[in-house]
Image (cartoon, rainbow, N blue to C red):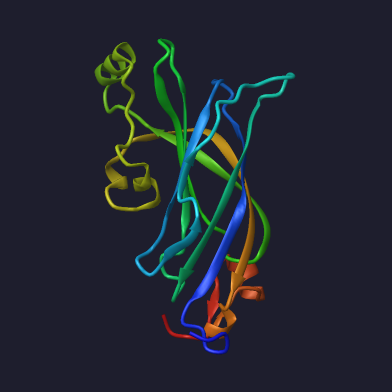
Length: 201
């Protein structure tokens, strides 16, 4: 591979999971992981991580993590553009760690600094009896694999409830996308949030 005729492009991501807004809860931590297509591969950085526990303070309702993100991907085409999945956990009434929210968002397509706010949700039991049993046993519904949040299969049969928000900050750098025919700084991308390509995908 030469610099004049690259075979892949690079997507460099750094930033942080800044804060969360969960008015009803405190003492929360988060986990993150990336989901991406078959043509994508990480070349450096961490694909997943877990933050420290943070508490509300100073009269603020925000839970501040400022947990760093740093990863670089390579790919031959934008299909399967990476998403970040965030899961938030905290103690219930009995001190058990339970999920307080799932959410996912695509990594921004255009280079530069971006701030994204993810609406979070939690799975719900399908009946009052199951909800009571879950509360009594300290076993709330949760996904065995959080990556399902970034996928469509099976989601239509899951009952969920909106709960909280998480704010992320990204700094995005791309390399060799234009040489492969992908334009990420056009008016089209600004209007639609999608990279324009001169190639047929």
